[in-house]
Length: 40
Image (cartoon, rainbow, N blue to C red; front, top):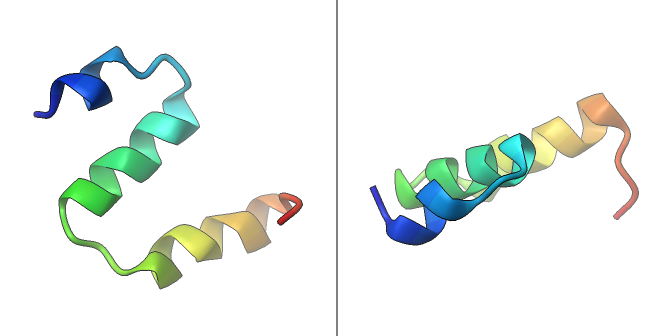
């Protein structure tokens, strides 16, 4: 695992970094914004 991912304290940021490192499409990450109703 990338050292930057390991040092990320925020669990949501860490999850996004892991998903991107695994090659998940951005639509997977953007889906969480809709569910959590995060501002863009």
